[in-house]
Length: 290
Ligand SMILES: Nc1ncnc2c1ncn2[C@@H]1O[C@H](COP(=O)(O)OP(=O)(O)OP(=O)(O)O)[C@@H](O)[C@H]1O
Image (cartoon, rainbow, N blue to C red; front, side, top):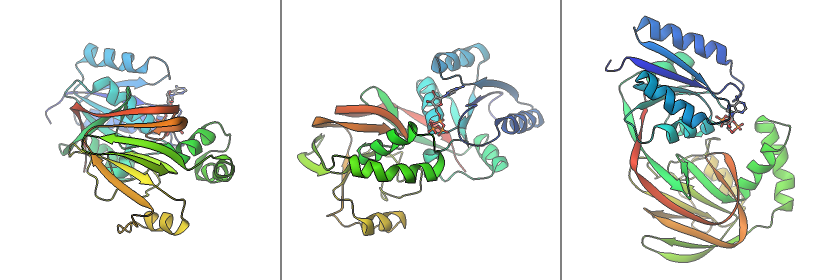
């Protein structure tokens, strides 16, 4: 093992998993391997700066995140200019990145992977000023996430229950103007995705040919709310009907719309936007994988 000091970043409120158990299992494993254990529990305030200070204070060489996608993005933001490898223990209500990287489901296996020497150098998308690691979108899904976040019913049931009033109230389709490094066009869509990886946290494989480490992202234009096509997408059938979804690969882009549209990044509602500037950062994020 070519590292000595490990920082475990835990989000105490994410998902439903028992964080005390995770902390004690990680600590035990690091002791067995003669590695030095450090712990940081997020507070929701100035976490990025505090993680950066933990890293420099202790010469951290590997970080394990136990949280959801929001916590992974926070740590990615904190370490994007370093050479630190990130290990992931999926412990959020949504674990889209873990799903995309096919990380194991069992804690002991996740930990073995997080401490291992296989890795992927992930592209980091920058959307306006925020980073995106797997998928962002404008439109109906972001509206759903907004309503879900403000509702008291959590989990898949909450998501489903919220979808009905969202669909009734939504003013879809939305009119977008897309400019990429090689095309310019108008697009009418219920949902406009910006994908670094293949899938949503639900497992829906909306971008079957996307690779998170190829220096390219895909703009997904979902034109209709069509139940059959949504079912096909969920079943991972890759022959998408171009009348339903159109995929535009790009290395940089600007998306604009006259009326503000709901926007989410990696499952976190951001707000209503009229313009999204998309770049791929020069830095990569090294993540331990099976
Ligand atoms: N100690 C804390 N108390 C309250 N909020 C926190 C705390 N630590 C982190 N957070 C918040 O947790 C959110 C990130 O959660 P994350 O996405 O990792 O897990 P999640 O269970 O998937 O969450 P969500 O259900 O909100 O998507 C961020 O908004 C962050 O500000």
